[in-house]
Image: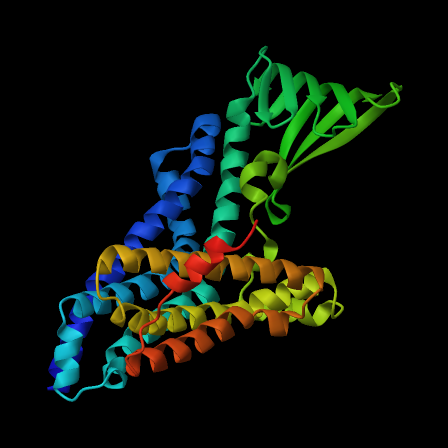
Length: 384
């Protein structure tokens, strides 16, 4: 009988879990597509490349959506059981809510395992591959952005004018370049020739100028300096190529566990970089644990809903999901600055979820409903 009941509950949870995961992932992906659209417009990126970029972004997007999927799917399933009085029927058959935990634990454990795999393997791979792809796009499209006898801006803040350009050898002749990336100074480079050199290991492109002059204008002081050169290299880094995309990527996100441990040993304990890497390392366990606890919390929250089950359940889920991630973001800032040790801070959201789950489960099992309305009414009556 219990096995049949467990299968019935799983059939209630699994479709909702998949649907919510897809919906949340699509919403997050839609926000990321704004940055990808910039690449399509400015660099002429094809559909195949865009598909690859989305593939590389998916692990992190799914990891972000998993806590919401675990929480909302379990909550809505038990809310439906509660609204249809099926929980009362189950209790009348002598089955307590504690005995309904196995299918919830199973779903939560599945979310934990998926989140763990994503954090340890898929997310570092996706972040590295995404950054490499952005570099390859910039490298392959840089030549296309440079046109003969036309002013062009293949890189942000760098304006080109080339008299002649050989596509096969990448050699430019009679070049005029204005570099305005530095807000305090502007450099104008006039050279007889230049060549585009790739530095894949540095995620950079080098513009190698031959026989020319640099006119340096300092905006604050209004001073002008002239420098003659035989050769001069202008470095175009990844953040210069796609500042909007690269700026949201942090290097610890691209590291696997072995690399994180290696960097952790080489850094001074307590430094900002050491705190960031330690937090990222511990987060690979803390975030999956949060997914697991979110699924468990969904059971008592859903079971106590008696009316307006779905709408109320969705509202509660979204509030808890937002509070959880806001808490994680605030604690991460504290640990990065050294105000809170990462080994302590990273577990605070999970500790909150664990205490909340124990409290809610015991209260619902004892048939003592969770009433938030009185507290909200008192809060509204407070002065100011």
